[in-house]
Image 1 (cartoon, rainbow, N blue to C red):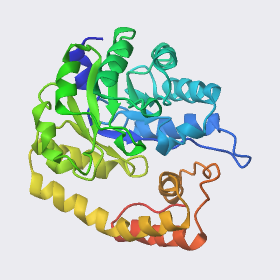
Image 2: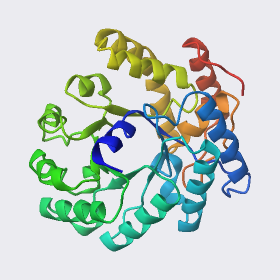
Image 3: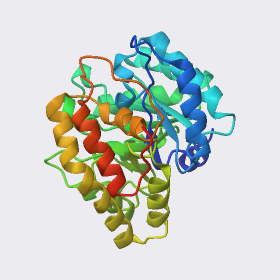
Image 4: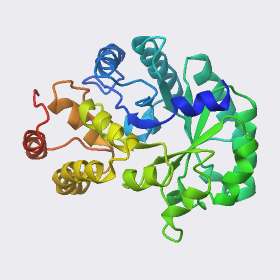
Amino acid sequence: MERDELRKLIQGTVVTTPTPMDKDMKVDYARITDVTRWWVEQGLGTNVAPLKVCAAGGEGPALTDSEWEQVIRTTVNAAGPDAVIMCALKAKSTYHTIEDAKKAQDLGIVGLQVDLPFSYHPNQDDYVRFFTDISDQIDIGIMIYNTFWWGCPGVTPETMHRLRDAEHVVALKYSSPPDRDYDEMQEYSDYFNVINNGGKPVRCHQLGGRGYITSTATAYAPFDLNFWSLLEAKKYDEAQAEMDKVDSKFKDWRVKNKDHSGGYQHLKAYMKVVGMDCGETREPSHWLSDELMDELRDIFREIGWPVKG
């Protein structure tokens, strides 16, 4: 696909999906089919709400390579030929990342989330080579994940400009390191789709950004679809008020959840509350207490979201 076409697909409310597990902690592929079809019915899996599978929130690091492939295959088949499906790749060498990228492409993936190669103590030149080499070998989009918190430097504006010739590098999942100004994304947001990952979706859009990462749309798509519509209409005050209303309710609960156990249990907890149970998370991320689940149900009721489980 050409760059302009890919930019029209990798944008909007980018939906991180949980990976369903059965009671034995094996991937539940039948359940993936069910929930994927339900997500599509809710309006997800489009060019304004692409589904992103096998990311950290979907327990991607806890999946074997064969499970990773089968999760992608099952999701793509369930979503249908017109759906927009992205996937995350595990952090590997350039050679193995290209191998995985080609597998994902063959399985029907439209865009890839690719971490910085943090295991290799990279510098900015390494980033340019790494992402250019991947881009040259595929026909689908790349969303760079600015994973500076793993001890490597964040991508700089200068590096993003050097990547303009990498045809399939079309997006950056963005948050700024503590020593850099968030607003510097404006230096390249005209050419790359900047996807907010740092709690500033409104500011990102104001600076030319083209999307944000959501963990709630899988449970209640109307909120995020409406929020994106408000951003596109540049109704920024209204959009911020809507996000603040929801975030203020979830904030304390999320802290309690992290204190209980690290990981990404919240995505599956949200699904359980709306009656679309995806099972529990693989250890060492410990499942939520009954008390935390009851608190979450109360939050959903307070903000007018459905409670069915």
